[in-house]
Each structure stands twice: as C-alpha cells, then as structure tokens.
Image 1 (tube, helix red, strand yellow):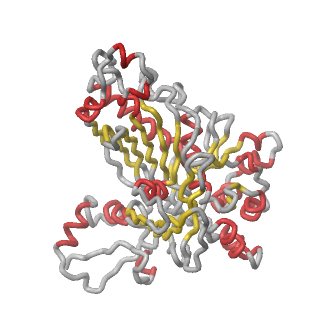
Image 2 (tube, helix red, strand yellow):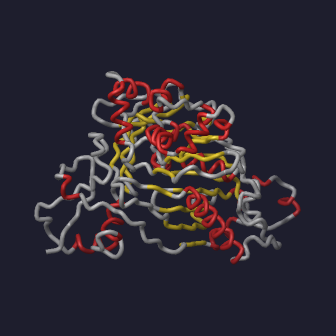
Length: 450
C-alpha cells in the first residue's frame, strides 16, 4: 500500500521520535539556475524618450520604478524584479547547498561564500536576461530599465561571524534549525533559576537552540581564531556577528553597512522587545564567560529605510546599469515579509506559510503580547524611524517542505516534491500512520530540541 506522510501542523499528534533517527547527512542535490523574464511586462511599462520625459525626474518614468527583491531562504536563493503594479517582470532562482555533518547529528550549515555567490549569480542572471532581451541597450524610443530600490528578505536566525578587515568568515553559517547548541541552552537555563522567565519577559523568546544568540555562544566556544580576536582589545573591533541579512548588506555595500532590521534583531535573544535595542545584560547572560561588545553586533534599523546602496565593485557585472548605486531600502525576516506581503496590517490578521518550515504569524498591533502557550512574541516590522513598531505572535514548526527534500534526497522515496501529491492522491486512507519530522526537535509549543 502506498504510504501517506502528513506534514506537521500546530495540532499534529506526537509520534515516538525513534521513528525519526534516520536524519539527513548528505548535501542536497542541486537544480540548475532557473531564470524567467516577461519582456512584454517590461516593455509595457517603458515610455518613449521624448523631450518632456527626458527632462523629467526618474520618478516619472515607470521603468525606473522597478523594485528588486533578494530572497535568501534556507532552500534557495532568488532575485526578483517587480513592476510598480506588483507584477513579476523577471526572476532567477538557485538551490542552496545544505551541509550536514555525518559525525554530528542535528548539525546544519551553509557556506557564507555560497550565500553571497548565489545572490550575485541570481542578480547577474536577471541582468543578463534583460540584456538578451535588448532591454538594457537604451536605444530610443525605449530607455533602459532601472531599479528604484532593492529589498532583502532572509532566513532569520541563521548566524555567522566574519572579519571586517579580511572579509573572511570564521566558520560556516549555522542554520536556524541546527541543534548543536543544546548544551549551550542547558547551561544558560541552569545558570539561574529565573533564566527562562527573564528572557521570555525581555525578549519574547524561550531559551532555545533556534535563536541566534546561542549560536554566537557556540561559535565563541568552538572557533579559536574568533575567540582570540574577540578577546584582543584591538582585533575585536574587526569582528562581526550577523544573520544572513547583515552579511548580504555588508557584501553589497562593500563593508559600509553593518546593520540588521528590527524583525531580524528580535530573533537573537539579545534585543529588548520594548526598546528594540540590543542590551549588554542579555548578551552577557547568553555569551558568558565571553565578553562580546555591542560593536560586534549589527546596528538595528527600521525594516523600511536607508541601508546604503549597492557598490558598483561588489561583484556584480561592471557594465550593468540595472544595479549601479541602487538604494537598499528594506529588510525583513522571511516570515515577517510573508505577513506583510499578505497585507496582514491590522491586529488579529494572520498568515500561515509552508516553506522549508511552517510558520503561523498573527499581527498583534503596537504592543507586544506575551504568550502563555508556547508561542513566540516577536517584532513584525517597523516602517521608518518615525513609524510604530508592530508586533506579532508566532507558532513555528521546523520542518515542512524540507521533509519532502529529505524524502527525495536521503530516502529516495520520491524523485520530486510533486510526487508526494501523486502518491497521496492514490491512497484513500493513511492507515493510521503519521510522521512528525522532528529533525530539529519540536518547536511551538514544546520547545524541545531532543
């Protein structure tokens, strides 16, 4: 009989984890770059070069109001170009290599260089597609398209450290669902009887392997060169800890911007939810006995605002006017971006999305709402320095679409994600079989990494 494997939901019943000891230990297979361009959409928004239009500002030219979006997720990298009407004019996508250590169950890493190289590759692929279509030639009557701004959305708690002076990472990025920090979490919880309640009240988060702070502590404990630089009064100024958004901003601006947005900052265990500032006490309680100065942690900025501009020498093709000096004007963690993109702007409005993991998020307005049921209290977004901070409640499940990748790459039960639907439709009953893919333990509401 064919077997149905039900993906997790917030209401799924627990299955003995003994069924799940076969964890992914190999790097995932990759698919080639996928590039799509809708030249008819682009040409429909371009305007002729006339005396009146050439003397007007770029804002009067619809083709200069294209918006670029970097989507650096857990499974893949994408770059998309949107029209002023929200149409997708072009996109490029490249699967991201997953690094699993066969000797360490629960370890999951990404190469920082590959995160950046994939971003460059996708952006350059879109530029090449524009050029192939003749859209960057600038011949009358069609002016070349220009991007008005670029935004970034990213896998959130994935953490890395790099050196400002050399630009080199100290270690692979530790992915958000990695569970190697179990002992770090256990140590923090045992250090004080009020640790759990203290961090919940200050940050809205439980002390768990999921969040960036425990990963910073692990890096300091296990990477000697990083630990030595942080200890050195001079070299510590060159150390940067960041999430993926900070890394991409730093690379795109050639080191001029070391920042994150408030939605990503709220996932560190370092940020006070009410002040939206990183606090030394929080950093110290997580990272002790290491002394991590706040200058090693990104500046927190609003989700919508100025993050610098694309440096022409960052690695993009030098003759590509599409990206030259384009402002970087928005950053949001991926789940908050989904909430915003689904227009859940009012308290009580929610979204539920299925990607690598599964995340239910609800807008709670301008005041943080504590959860007594294992949900996360987090920041949704902040629009501009004068805008209110908008908060959310979140229910998190670590593995959703990644379970299909496991079935494909590690068990070989399917050859593509689409096969899962085919097999499910051929079976009228699941025979009482359920699979809870607790490869990273259980997130909401249990927060049990074992």
